[in-house]
Length: 95
Image (cartoon, rainbow, N blue to C red):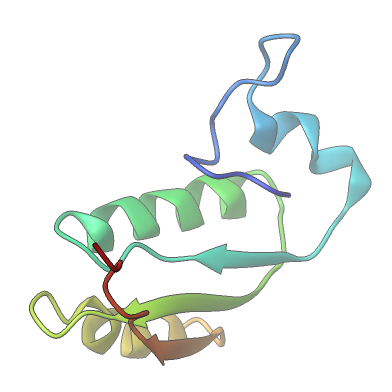
């Protein structure tokens, strides 16, 4: 599932993308949010996908030195046998 805003973003027909892609049985790599509110939105997305029967193979997240969400999400997903891959944040945009 390629989605750049949320698992329940609408398709052109108006249904949730999470529901529209479900029949394809695609593996999922969940991209976690590294900013404020990211823990809650990531767990909410995970649960929405899980309830629909998706298999989440791993979680990707940037390492934000201020919020440090990867430090919470790594053990959270480890308890659920899902590997979290954290990466240094990309450099700031040039002016």
